Every structure is written in structure tokens, then in C-alpha cells.
Image (cartoon, rainbow, N blue to C red; front, side, top):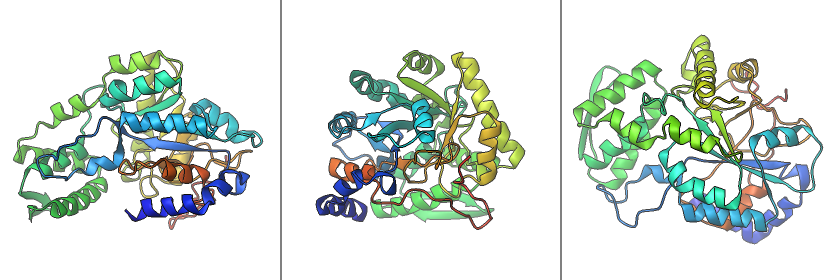
Length: 359
């Protein structure tokens, strides 16, 4: 992988070491890490050989354990999101921080991640789209992966036209997955639901059961929320890209997600995650909505470092997504040093939205 090679070269060149000591011009006050799933790796290929697109969003419990041990050895402070907010507005501190965050409410977070994090006394954040613990969410990417892995030929409606794809090789399966995942992400919520339900019916996939089996319920989340090391944040109701919604619908998704989580857990939910969180999935208007909705923070998936002294917008916090196919702690150290990307500067989108202006 080219990215892994570049990270390894940066490590051995010494850039990670200089960056770690470089203050706000390199590593800022700290970094928020973004993970999704934590589960043991399989040594056996699946039904489609090594077609496993979800591997990029998975890490193993062993790698999580190695990461936390390394963070302690490298003298990073592992902190929760409330402390991230505090350090973002005060002067630079001698030690940099790392905040561990997990998107979604995957069942394996309770089964595999929590025992590791608890054993280390490491605080962490889970961002919950509330339709999933309610048993109403649609895990469309898991369904799409399952169908492509199993089938050699797929037919579906795209833009009112019946399309047919032959996918006998692993490379063909990856190519189709990337195409359909990108296409579905851009659909309006009702169109996305129609598309994935049509596909599941054609190929006998029980979407509701698949989604429930993959997600924690409120009992699971309540047990985690009882631990003071665990912060439960909101990620809307249905985890739709906010840019695909009208503004009123986007605000409703944000406020209802928070209200449902607070009612179910009987505690305040102060922190938010933009679904998907890349530059195409939310706009400046949604950053303003996050503040109006009363969230203390909102995280994106746009890579960057968190600056101190109020230089980073708390409702557009950058996060570094970890690619689970990379299992090198050297690569991790380079990312944490901040040398692979400049501190996030105010970024003007083509539509005029300025996402990262401090509050």
C-alpha cells in the first residue's frame, strides 16, 4: 500500500520525531483518532476469497491493545471529549493528547473493544445513530458487501435503468463495491432505502436481521454508559449524510438523535459526529446547526490536528481515520506527529462554506 509505505518512510526519515517536538506548527495540541469496528481477524478467506472491503474500517483487539500501550509509552495523554474541548481553548500544554473515538454502535465494541479499553483505564467516545439500537437502522454497506461477496452476477436499478454486473473475480467485486457504495451515499434517504431494500429482496438478504445483529441495543449502551470512562455521543438518527438532506430535515436528524439518546440513557448527550464526516457529507450550515442544537463539540472525518487556544472550531473538529489494513505502530506514530498533514486551516468550499473558522 502506497500510503503505508509513505508513513514508514516518514518514520525512518525522522520526520515523526521532529514533528512530535514541533509544537503547534506540526502536531498541535493533539489528535482525535477515528475507528469503527474492533474484532478478531479471520485467517480464512470469505465466500469471495479475500474480498473484504470492511477491513479498512476494522482493527483487531490485539492492535487496539498495542496502540494504547504505545500511546502510554510515547507519553501521550489519552483523554475524553470533554477534556478535548477544554484543551482546545486553553494555551498549549507540555504533553499532547489523543482521543479515541468509535463511529456507529457496532456490537463488537462491547464484546471486543470495551474489555481492552477498560483494562487500560482509557477513556473513549462512541457516536451512536439512534435508529440502530432501536432496531430500525439499515446497515446498507454491510448488506452490499454481503451480496457482492456471495454473487457472481448482480442486477439492480440505477437511475431508472436496469443494470447488470458480472463480478467473478475479487478485483471485479472491489470495483463494483466502490462504485455502488459511492452511488448509494449520494442518494436521498428515501431513494437509498429503496435501492438497498430492492437489492436485498433480489438476493434474499434479510436487511433488518443483518442490521440488528451487527448493532448494540440500548441495554448494551446503558451498560457502557454507566462507566465514567465512556462518553456516548450522537450521530443523528439514521446516519444519513447531512448534505443529502434539506436543512430542516438535517436539523431534525441532529436534534432527534440527541433527544432519543438522552431519553434512552437518561443522561446529557453533549457531543456529535457528522455521519461520514468528509468534505462532501456536511456543510457550514450544519456546523452552525450543531452549535444551535447545543452540542459542545462536533467531529468530522477530515484529517488534521486539534489546535489549542481556540484556533480549532469545536463544531468542526478534525479526526484521523485509521485504516485497519495498516497494522504498523511506526505508521501510527507518524500520523500522531502531525507531519503528514498541516494543521487544519480555514477551508473555503466551492459553495462558499468555510468549515473550520473557530467559534
